[in-house]
Length: 341
Image (cartoon, one colour):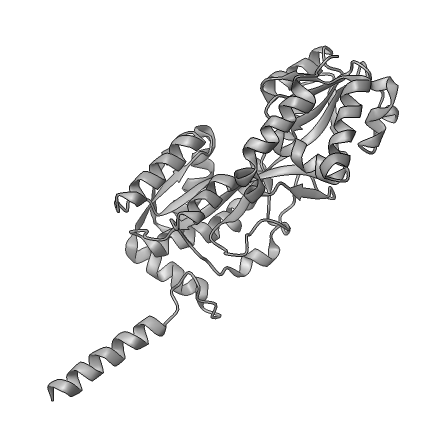
């Protein structure tokens, strides 16, 4: 009898292990199961870099819809990364969901801090939003666009390609943000990659010069003042907001527009795994139009975007991690040190 009981216990354990977790379950009642389990848990803890003023607009609708309390701890990117890794190393499992930059999310995945998720929503996201391991998914995009002072630059003269920027008429008129090495690396690739791509920037700087400025807000304001007639790298919402206030600024895109993404992930040892998973799904679906309302660019292609019709290329977060030192040095040597010459 004891052997029979032991065999039944082992069989039951084996069957339980064979059952897929909610994170990887793909049945037709997937969301229904997640919601039911999440409501039983009743709460979740989120670590994020989302601007404090924007947190209520994203979190309150989730709490209202599902009756699940979201405890938010927000800080800068480095602090969110450090806290999450430190707690994981100490086996102090407090966080359920994380939302911040995709390169940092990839760093968490490498340390096995995140849970792989099989979401049907992934098929609706912008290309490049989900890595092969599926441990995080991009939710919003910070898209670099080109901005110009409408009193100094005529719309009909705007460049349509990167090669057009080599025209002498842009001499002394171009500005760039001083820490946009991800954009730089991607554009080098678009212009042939390697030595060929770097030659493009060497030629551009030698012929027309580029004025680096620290901070996208400062660079946008300098376009408004006319001190920098055209900026190559400002975030899309900045010139749009200034334009709506009557400033002499407008923006355009040399396609593809380059973007870096922020992403959501579920902690592998989340104390409230179902609630975390439900928040993950929410950020990719219901929260997407809410993000548009607070000037973010959504990754879900079924949601109307302020950049509708614009081809977007998301920077590679793996390259951002593995080659950060390389591209920072190349950006400094190729653009920043030679600026204005």
